[in-house]
Image (tube, rainbow, N blue to C red):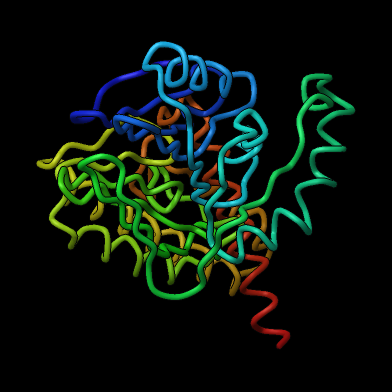
Length: 278
Protein backbone atom coordinates (compact mmCIF):
# COMPACT_ATOMS: atom_id res chain seq x y z
CA UNK A 1 0.00 0.00 0.00
CA UNK A 2 1.28 3.46 -0.91
CA UNK A 3 0.72 6.35 1.49
CA UNK A 4 1.14 10.11 1.10
CA UNK A 5 0.06 13.23 2.94
CA UNK A 6 -2.25 15.36 0.79
CA UNK A 7 -2.29 18.26 3.29
CA UNK A 8 -1.93 18.73 7.04
CA UNK A 9 -3.60 15.77 8.77
CA UNK A 10 -5.07 14.54 5.46
CA UNK A 11 -3.65 11.29 4.08
CA UNK A 12 -4.38 9.19 1.04
CA UNK A 13 -3.63 5.53 0.41
CA UNK A 14 -3.31 3.63 -2.86
CA UNK A 15 -3.54 -0.11 -3.30
CA UNK A 16 -0.61 -2.01 -4.69
CA UNK A 17 -2.75 -5.13 -5.07
CA UNK A 18 -5.88 -4.08 -6.94
CA UNK A 19 -6.50 -1.47 -9.66
CA UNK A 20 -4.76 1.38 -7.80
CA UNK A 21 -7.88 1.83 -5.67
CA UNK A 22 -7.57 4.64 -3.11
CA UNK A 23 -8.70 5.51 0.40
CA UNK A 24 -8.12 8.40 2.78
CA UNK A 25 -7.83 9.50 6.39
CA UNK A 26 -8.54 12.85 8.02
CA UNK A 27 -6.94 12.92 11.45
CA UNK A 28 -7.94 15.13 14.35
CA UNK A 29 -6.38 15.43 17.80
CA UNK A 30 -8.79 12.94 19.37
CA UNK A 31 -10.09 10.74 16.53
CA UNK A 32 -9.95 10.13 12.78
CA UNK A 33 -12.25 9.65 9.82
CA UNK A 34 -11.48 7.00 7.21
CA UNK A 35 -12.74 7.39 3.65
CA UNK A 36 -13.15 3.97 2.01
CA UNK A 37 -11.16 0.90 3.01
CA UNK A 38 -9.27 -0.49 -0.01
CA UNK A 39 -9.52 -4.27 -0.27
CA UNK A 40 -9.47 -6.18 3.04
CA UNK A 41 -5.86 -7.35 2.63
CA UNK A 42 -4.79 -3.71 2.87
CA UNK A 43 -7.46 -2.36 5.22
CA UNK A 44 -5.43 -3.63 8.15
CA UNK A 45 -2.49 -1.47 7.01
CA UNK A 46 -4.68 1.66 7.18
CA UNK A 47 -5.89 0.60 10.61
CA UNK A 48 -2.35 0.07 11.89
CA UNK A 49 -1.14 3.42 10.54
CA UNK A 50 -3.96 5.49 12.02
CA UNK A 51 -4.52 3.68 15.30
CA UNK A 52 -0.95 2.61 16.09
CA UNK A 53 1.41 5.09 14.39
CA UNK A 54 -0.80 8.18 14.76
CA UNK A 55 -2.35 6.90 18.02
CA UNK A 56 -5.93 8.01 17.38
CA UNK A 57 -9.06 5.83 17.16
CA UNK A 58 -11.20 5.74 14.04
CA UNK A 59 -14.59 7.27 14.89
CA UNK A 60 -16.17 7.28 11.42
CA UNK A 61 -15.71 5.35 8.19
CA UNK A 62 -17.27 6.94 5.12
CA UNK A 63 -18.12 4.69 2.16
CA UNK A 64 -18.16 6.55 -1.15
CA UNK A 65 -20.27 3.74 -2.65
CA UNK A 66 -21.14 0.07 -2.23
CA UNK A 67 -18.50 -1.63 -4.41
CA UNK A 68 -16.33 -4.18 -2.62
CA UNK A 69 -12.98 -2.44 -3.03
CA UNK A 70 -14.33 0.61 -1.19
CA UNK A 71 -16.32 -0.84 1.70
CA UNK A 72 -15.66 -4.50 2.45
CA UNK A 73 -13.04 -3.48 5.00
CA UNK A 74 -15.62 -1.76 7.25
CA UNK A 75 -15.53 -4.65 9.70
CA UNK A 76 -11.89 -3.87 10.56
CA UNK A 77 -13.15 -0.80 12.44
CA UNK A 78 -15.67 -2.36 14.87
CA UNK A 79 -15.91 0.74 17.08
CA UNK A 80 -16.50 3.14 14.18
CA UNK A 81 -19.79 4.41 12.82
CA UNK A 82 -20.20 3.87 9.08
CA UNK A 83 -21.54 6.73 6.94
CA UNK A 84 -22.86 6.51 3.39
CA UNK A 85 -25.67 7.36 1.03
CA UNK A 86 -29.07 5.79 1.71
CA UNK A 87 -28.73 3.79 -1.51
CA UNK A 88 -25.31 2.54 -0.41
CA UNK A 89 -26.86 0.95 2.67
CA UNK A 90 -29.69 -0.57 0.62
CA UNK A 91 -27.36 -1.97 -2.03
CA UNK A 92 -24.97 -3.44 0.52
CA UNK A 93 -27.82 -5.15 2.37
CA UNK A 94 -29.34 -6.43 -0.86
CA UNK A 95 -26.25 -7.54 -2.78
CA UNK A 96 -23.01 -7.51 -0.79
CA UNK A 97 -23.55 -10.53 1.46
CA UNK A 98 -24.28 -12.73 -1.53
CA UNK A 99 -21.27 -11.34 -3.41
CA UNK A 100 -19.06 -11.93 -0.36
CA UNK A 101 -20.24 -15.52 -0.13
CA UNK A 102 -19.29 -16.09 -3.75
CA UNK A 103 -15.91 -14.39 -3.26
CA UNK A 104 -15.23 -16.62 -0.26
CA UNK A 105 -15.40 -19.70 -2.48
CA UNK A 106 -12.40 -18.42 -4.44
CA UNK A 107 -10.41 -16.64 -1.73
CA UNK A 108 -10.41 -17.88 1.89
CA UNK A 109 -9.59 -14.36 3.10
CA UNK A 110 -13.13 -13.25 2.39
CA UNK A 111 -14.51 -15.88 4.76
CA UNK A 112 -13.11 -13.88 7.68
CA UNK A 113 -14.88 -10.59 6.99
CA UNK A 114 -18.42 -9.32 7.48
CA UNK A 115 -20.48 -6.84 5.51
CA UNK A 116 -21.18 -3.77 7.67
CA UNK A 117 -23.52 -1.33 5.86
CA UNK A 118 -23.70 2.37 6.76
CA UNK A 119 -25.52 3.20 9.99
CA UNK A 120 -25.76 6.94 9.25
CA UNK A 121 -27.19 7.75 5.82
CA UNK A 122 -28.55 10.68 3.86
CA UNK A 123 -30.60 10.99 0.69
CA UNK A 124 -30.71 14.68 -0.20
CA UNK A 125 -28.53 17.66 0.60
CA UNK A 126 -25.22 17.11 2.39
CA UNK A 127 -23.72 16.03 5.69
CA UNK A 128 -20.96 17.85 7.60
CA UNK A 129 -18.40 16.52 10.07
CA UNK A 130 -15.83 18.55 12.01
CA UNK A 131 -12.53 16.71 12.55
CA UNK A 132 -10.24 18.89 14.61
CA UNK A 133 -9.90 22.07 12.53
CA UNK A 134 -11.10 20.37 9.34
CA UNK A 135 -14.70 20.45 8.15
CA UNK A 136 -15.83 17.69 5.82
CA UNK A 137 -18.78 18.17 3.48
CA UNK A 138 -20.30 14.94 2.19
CA UNK A 139 -22.54 15.16 -0.89
CA UNK A 140 -24.05 13.03 -3.64
CA UNK A 141 -22.01 12.51 -6.83
CA UNK A 142 -23.77 9.78 -8.84
CA UNK A 143 -22.92 8.51 -12.30
CA UNK A 144 -20.45 5.71 -11.63
CA UNK A 145 -23.13 4.31 -9.36
CA UNK A 146 -26.41 5.69 -8.08
CA UNK A 147 -25.15 5.81 -4.47
CA UNK A 148 -21.88 7.62 -5.13
CA UNK A 149 -20.78 10.38 -2.76
CA UNK A 150 -17.75 12.65 -2.50
CA UNK A 151 -16.10 14.22 0.55
CA UNK A 152 -14.68 17.74 0.44
CA UNK A 153 -12.11 18.86 3.00
CA UNK A 154 -13.29 22.46 2.90
CA UNK A 155 -10.26 24.22 4.39
CA UNK A 156 -7.84 22.49 2.02
CA UNK A 157 -10.13 22.17 -1.04
CA UNK A 158 -9.20 18.50 -1.28
CA UNK A 159 -11.95 16.29 -2.72
CA UNK A 160 -12.21 12.54 -2.26
CA UNK A 161 -14.44 11.52 -5.16
CA UNK A 162 -14.68 7.76 -4.90
CA UNK A 163 -15.26 6.39 -8.38
CA UNK A 164 -17.18 9.47 -9.53
CA UNK A 165 -13.79 10.50 -10.92
CA UNK A 166 -11.33 7.95 -12.35
CA UNK A 167 -8.57 7.93 -14.97
CA UNK A 168 -11.01 5.91 -17.11
CA UNK A 169 -14.63 6.68 -16.23
CA UNK A 170 -16.55 3.49 -15.48
CA UNK A 171 -20.33 3.36 -15.92
CA UNK A 172 -21.26 -0.35 -15.85
CA UNK A 173 -23.43 0.21 -12.75
CA UNK A 174 -24.12 3.84 -13.58
CA UNK A 175 -25.34 6.33 -16.14
CA UNK A 176 -23.19 8.08 -18.72
CA UNK A 177 -25.28 11.27 -18.81
CA UNK A 178 -25.34 11.58 -15.02
CA UNK A 179 -21.58 11.04 -14.82
CA UNK A 180 -20.96 13.80 -17.38
CA UNK A 181 -23.00 16.17 -15.19
CA UNK A 182 -21.16 15.05 -12.05
CA UNK A 183 -17.78 15.58 -13.74
CA UNK A 184 -18.80 19.12 -14.68
CA UNK A 185 -19.88 19.77 -11.10
CA UNK A 186 -16.56 18.56 -9.69
CA UNK A 187 -14.65 20.71 -12.16
CA UNK A 188 -16.42 23.84 -10.86
CA UNK A 189 -15.49 23.36 -7.19
CA UNK A 190 -12.19 25.33 -7.23
CA UNK A 191 -10.20 22.42 -5.87
CA UNK A 192 -6.56 22.08 -4.93
CA UNK A 193 -6.47 18.30 -5.31
CA UNK A 194 -8.73 15.45 -6.38
CA UNK A 195 -8.24 12.06 -4.76
CA UNK A 196 -9.72 9.79 -7.41
CA UNK A 197 -11.31 6.47 -6.54
CA UNK A 198 -8.49 4.81 -8.50
CA UNK A 199 -5.18 6.19 -9.70
CA UNK A 200 -3.00 9.08 -8.63
CA UNK A 201 -3.80 12.44 -7.07
CA UNK A 202 -4.86 15.12 -9.54
CA UNK A 203 -3.24 18.49 -8.80
CA UNK A 204 -4.92 21.87 -9.18
CA UNK A 205 -3.39 22.65 -12.56
CA UNK A 206 -4.41 19.26 -13.93
CA UNK A 207 -8.05 19.19 -12.84
CA UNK A 208 -9.65 21.03 -15.76
CA UNK A 209 -7.77 18.92 -18.29
CA UNK A 210 -8.67 15.69 -16.51
CA UNK A 211 -12.34 16.68 -16.41
CA UNK A 212 -12.31 17.53 -20.12
CA UNK A 213 -10.61 14.24 -20.92
CA UNK A 214 -13.22 12.26 -18.99
CA UNK A 215 -16.15 14.07 -20.59
CA UNK A 216 -14.61 13.63 -24.05
CA UNK A 217 -14.24 9.91 -23.39
CA UNK A 218 -17.80 9.51 -22.13
CA UNK A 219 -19.21 11.34 -25.13
CA UNK A 220 -17.03 9.28 -27.46
CA UNK A 221 -18.22 5.93 -26.15
CA UNK A 222 -21.81 7.13 -26.13
CA UNK A 223 -21.54 8.11 -29.80
CA UNK A 224 -19.66 4.94 -30.77
CA UNK A 225 -22.25 2.64 -29.22
CA UNK A 226 -25.17 4.55 -30.73
CA UNK A 227 -23.55 4.26 -34.15
CA UNK A 228 -22.74 0.57 -33.74
CA UNK A 229 -26.25 -0.28 -32.55
CA UNK A 230 -27.64 0.84 -35.91
CA UNK A 231 -25.33 -1.44 -37.90
CA UNK A 232 -25.34 -5.15 -38.67
CA UNK A 233 -23.34 -7.23 -36.18
CA UNK A 234 -23.19 -4.40 -33.61
CA UNK A 235 -21.33 -6.46 -31.01
CA UNK A 236 -18.55 -7.23 -33.48
CA UNK A 237 -18.22 -3.51 -34.19
CA UNK A 238 -18.24 -2.68 -30.48
CA UNK A 239 -15.51 -5.22 -29.76
CA UNK A 240 -13.32 -3.47 -32.34
CA UNK A 241 -13.64 -0.02 -30.73
CA UNK A 242 -10.37 0.44 -28.88
CA UNK A 243 -9.88 2.78 -25.97
CA UNK A 244 -7.25 4.92 -27.70
CA UNK A 245 -9.69 6.03 -30.41
CA UNK A 246 -12.03 7.23 -27.64
CA UNK A 247 -9.37 9.43 -26.06
CA UNK A 248 -7.87 7.32 -23.28
CA UNK A 249 -4.69 5.29 -23.01
CA UNK A 250 -4.75 1.54 -22.63
CA UNK A 251 -1.86 1.67 -20.13
CA UNK A 252 -3.89 3.47 -17.46
CA UNK A 253 -4.64 1.78 -14.13
CA UNK A 254 -1.89 -0.75 -14.48
CA UNK A 255 -3.09 -1.96 -17.84
CA UNK A 256 -6.73 -2.77 -17.01
CA UNK A 257 -8.04 0.30 -18.86
CA UNK A 258 -8.94 -1.67 -22.01
CA UNK A 259 -10.95 -4.15 -19.95
CA UNK A 260 -12.90 -1.35 -18.26
CA UNK A 261 -13.43 0.27 -21.65
CA UNK A 262 -14.92 -2.88 -23.19
CA UNK A 263 -17.20 -3.34 -20.18
CA UNK A 264 -18.35 0.27 -20.60
CA UNK A 265 -19.19 -0.33 -24.26
CA UNK A 266 -21.14 -3.50 -23.60
CA UNK A 267 -23.03 -1.91 -20.71
CA UNK A 268 -23.99 1.05 -22.91
CA UNK A 269 -25.14 -1.31 -25.66
CA UNK A 270 -27.35 -3.23 -23.22
CA UNK A 271 -28.79 0.03 -21.94
CA UNK A 272 -29.48 1.13 -25.53
CA UNK A 273 -31.35 -2.11 -26.24
CA UNK A 274 -33.39 -1.77 -23.05
CA UNK A 275 -34.36 1.79 -23.96
CA UNK A 276 -35.50 0.66 -27.40
CA UNK A 277 -37.62 -2.13 -25.89
CA UNK A 278 -39.23 0.17 -23.35
